[in-house]
Length: 168
Image 1 (tube, rainbow, N blue to C red):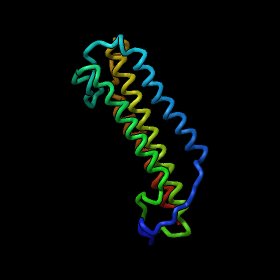
Image 2: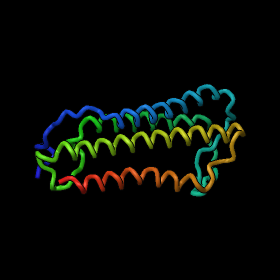
Image 3: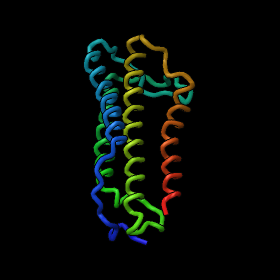
Image 4: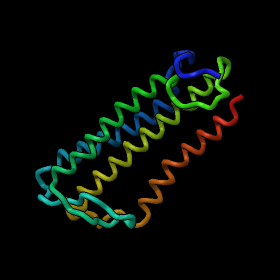
């Protein structure tokens, strides 16, 4: 067993799948910010600020509140990007050792990369949908939004745990 202070630091190049996830996640997120910038002056003073479990607007707020999503997304993206660079500090089972550390690090880093980019895409979609509702171009998320968000975040986690359980 290796505690986090004695875990090997292994330089693992970013995989092709991580690059693809980053390109998709950052592009979608940046696209939503560009959309907000281009439509900022068209937005009314009151915009959707919160949704219930059915995807219906249950609180309206100032259009300035739309800036919260990109701000949180940027901070979360930066923090998770930093964590991706240091997989030796992630949480691992006791069976982590010198021989399997590379495999554990790769699975953990890929999982973190996928979750980061899925969250960025979710934030982008919420921002886009909130602005679209405020502009009268959309009726809201609908009941499918929450289940889709939960499933889209849980699938990589389950796959990551399964892959991690197969590491010897």
